[in-house]
Image (cartoon, rainbow, N blue to C red; front, side, top):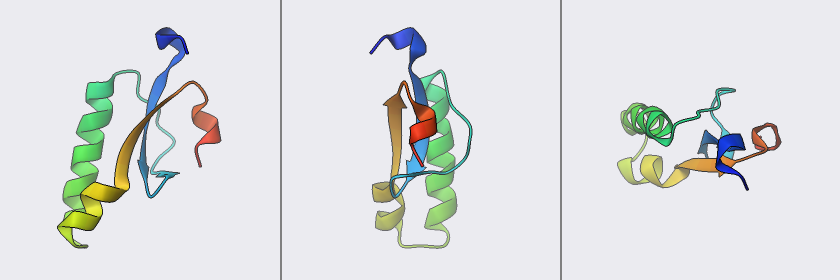
Length: 64
């Protein structure tokens, strides 16, 4: 998997949260952190951080 073709996708519960693909893992982490903060205000804190993941992929359209 070549790095120049890889992108990062933020998911929750295995599903994409948005159509945005991130080229930089730090930007994806920033988005995931803001999502976790928002979820924690509604759900139990442990549920939020466990379900949000960053996926590195060359096929972002296949993550649903």
